[in-house]
Amino acid sequence: MATLTAQQLVMDVPGRPAGRPLDLTIEPGQRWGILGPNGAGKTTLLHTLAGLRSPRAGQVLLDGRALPALSHRRLARQRAVVFQERQDSFPATVMETALIGRHPYLSPWQWEGREDHRRALAALEALGLTPLRDRLVSTLSGGERQRVALATALTQAPSLWLVDEPTNHLDLHHQVAVMALLAEQADRGAAVVMCLHDLNLAARWCDHLLLLYPDGELCFGPAADMLVPSALEALYGQRLAVGQVDGAPVFVPTGGLPANKE
Amino acid sequence: MADAESKRRLILLALLLLALLSLAVAVAVGSVAVSPTQLLAVLGGGGEPLHHDLILTLRGPRAMAAFATGGLLALAGALMQILLRNPLADPYVLGVSGGAAVAALLALLCGAGITLVSGSAFAGALLSTLLVFGLAHGVGGWTPTRLLLTGVVVAAGWGAMVTFMLALSPARQLPGMLYWLMGDLSYAGSPWPAWLVLVPALLLTLPLGGSLNVLARGPLQAAALGVAVRPLQWLLYGLASLLTAMAVTTAGSVGFVGLVVPHMLRLLLGNDQRLILPASVLAGGSLLTLADTVARTALAPEQLPVGVITALLGVPSFLYLLYRSR
Image 1 (cartoon, rainbow over the protein chains, first blue to last red):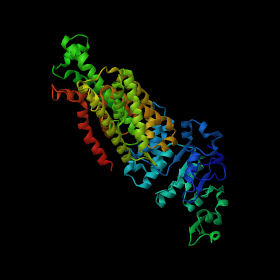
Image 2: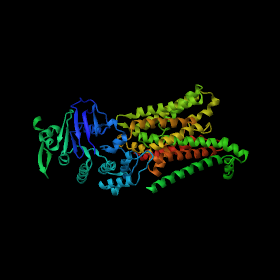
Image 3: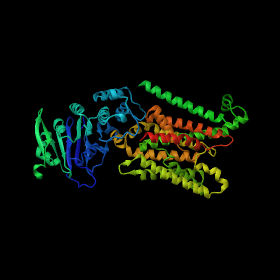
Image 4: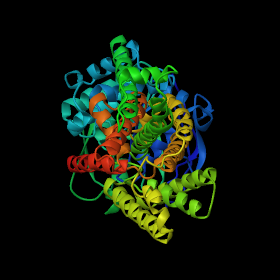
């Protein structure tokens, strides 16, 4: 269980005025989506919440303790980050890459044991990667690599997930599978925060939303309150049509600018 | 995972045997050959006086110096490759050895003692690393081409400065000073300072292997997995410079050991630093010991600088790596 709190948080985006400070609490079991147009600072906000980037002002707390006060290892046992960009300078297999998620649990002299391998294998299975376990990551497609990154985070067994664009490069089937996996993690008590560019995935899978505007303004709340067409049209500068599928709203971009910009 | 563990033990044991074998070959081969039984007799405290002198005062110290230099360079190379996330990084190619050589030579020409020469070499290595990393680190990080180009140009600059200083030195001292340009163990002094740096450095890096594995995946991923990235990067930077400086003060600028050895081991053993780092020390030491034996005996009584042998091995490997990395 982990509760993430932002107190008077102002993220540090070079060359942008401060914007409104953020006071936010993310509870165990919640699924948060961060929405905003390109360049609004979704990734920066995610990295700031993860403690990987210092805020301009304010602080982020995990279970009431400021992130810089926590040891690196302890923090890494609780929160996992899935990045949008990954570098593989050295050849590594899928299994080796998943096992990296056990690093926070190993002492400096320790090698991965039976339990670590079991967890990594289970994570590969959950993401449908078992047949690829001995393949080199550099030979995989973008979508397969994306799933390897998620498997590494799953091996890390975090109670807080911070995921940048979980469905990047994924085909429709794997998009649904990955979102279902994150929802299952939330059902088991993890807090999940994800940056999304797909409004419909957010409407379908998130119970809370944070809308991030390019000028640093933001608003957040339960998904039902945030999925207001006029607010979303203003967010993206795009007129939207709304429908209903399976009880969730579906947004489709239509021609022209939103009403308030005409 | 007991299999994997016994496999690792076996690999290190095999490399340890290789190391001992290379040292034995180095002391046994030469103008006067020493047979295994004679070698054991000398090591046991007996043996013929001629063999005794040959092994304990001539070939032995030189072999130990060669081994330590090889180990230092291979470890420095392996660490730099992780730090830069670039399998082509090597102290010689990136000009770190050159910086150490220039600084050491300057101190020597100013009449400094051995301690000051070593300290000066360390400062030169640090400066050179900082220069190359600083210049090559453009917006958005290190690109391999930029890093290599910067390193090669800086190395050429150091080479010119060494040549300049050699040109100003008295002609009769020249043969003894050329090794700053092209590594040579004929002039190596006591091997023990190099061992005194190598052993603690290896012991220090062994528990860092896991963190280095994560750092090889990029600094952000490493930070997300609980590695204190900045302190670790500074430690690697300082350590790689220190190891290079010690190697240079022992044997001059020996090239390519730091490139070839970790690369071969990664091909054979995978890229787990917990295994690669100790394996690099053992294999790097063995390689340079054997290379020096070849350099000493191939055209006997002429002695080649060992740097010629390592370059003959290293240049094709480097070109192959570069070709493959496209």
